[in-house]
Amino acid sequence: MGNGVDCSFELTAYNSFLSILFIVVFSLALLGNTIVIITIVCKTHRSRSITNFYLLNLAVADLLRSVVCIPPTLLSELTHCWLLGPIMCKAVAYLQPVGVCASAYTLVVIAIERYYAICRPLESRKWHTKKRALITISTVWMLSFGANMGSLAIFDLVPYRAQWTCDTTKGSTIDFIYQLYVTTILLFVPLTLMVALYGHVIYTLNIAINCDNPLLEQVILENEIPIKPTFTDWLFQSFTRVSSQKYQKEKNSLSIPTASHQRSSRMNSINTLFGSPRNSFDSSLLLRSTNQDKILLAKRKVTRMLITIVIVFAACWVPSYTWWLIVRTADLLGHNLWHSGLNTSLTILTYISSMANPITYCFMNKSFRSSVFSYCHPRRSRKRCTPVLSHRTASREAGAAKDLQSPNIPLIKIDLAMENTMHI
Image (cartoon, rainbow, N blue to C red; front, side, top):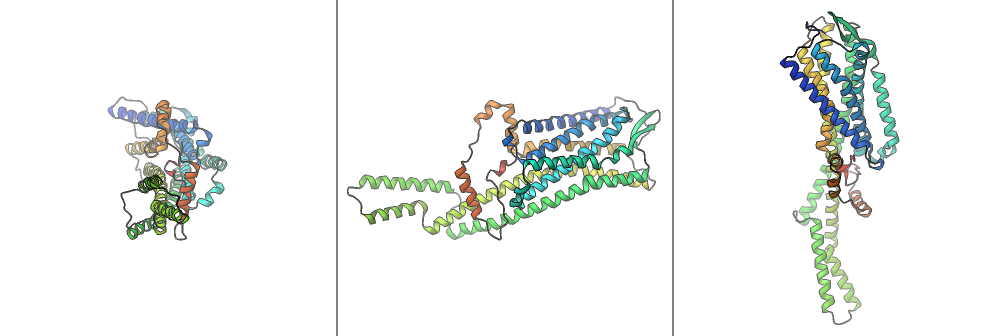
């Protein structure tokens, strides 16, 4: 779609600003996605989670689209013509929707993985393996390459004054049908699936949190358990008090205690340490409730990061697809609504999505930041190692969380370290 400008580059303020903007977006997308790929690939095989395979695939798709599409688009925007020949015309017109499709359906797969991990954890174990993840990723790419074959037949070089431009060649009716198809496959279907899946995840988490918090409040109100002192502080003080009493009894004892006296001393020590049976049960319930809250909050934090990625994807692509659908509809009705400046702005917005995902990982994933920091400062990262829970401690805390489940509470089973579940 020409705008009456000759195919020549002019050094103007607008072209300079446009060049700087494209270069910044391209550089950030290239750097960010490369860091994501290197950080995930260079980690040991045991440290890679299933989600990281999908995030790696997302970074590869964004990197492909950035390298193939941004430089030719900038050249076309500056000269208002296509100077790279017919092969690159078809390649760019084909690979851009391929990259978008791979990104979109990778996000759908991540949403499905999060849905099963949170809402149906027992069922997720059946297919939550690295082998199936690789099969799923391969399927996404085959779908992406196959679903966009039509662009190879539609786009070609079109004569424009004394030069050429890369545009559609099949008429307004085919253009409208193709644009409607692309909008449905690349935007409407994946976005609808992601919204539905994450909506169900949020609903499940809210039900679980609403079921757990009133129970915790009831325990605090009925037994007047102080809120500020933690269970660890109470246990440490009780243990210190028992040890002191035991030391005083052994120091002041001048005769052999009777059997009844031994039983009484043991019962007093147990009651001093753990309280009465009722208080022991309430304290255990409070601990399990606290652990369950940590589990749910950690899950919600991870889900919030993934939802942010989806929102960024929608914000970057919905305006562009809507604009092109309006343009193709107007062309079908015989009206010309083309606006070069608006199209350029929306095109830049779509490329921003390629650099937004790595930024989202860095700002919202503590594990990713730690991994990047370990590569930049390997010596300093060794000093900041975080102790890992022993198997016995993890099993005990997981058992406490399991005891809290009831028929009215959704089954949510996850490691207490879910905050860093996306191990890079």
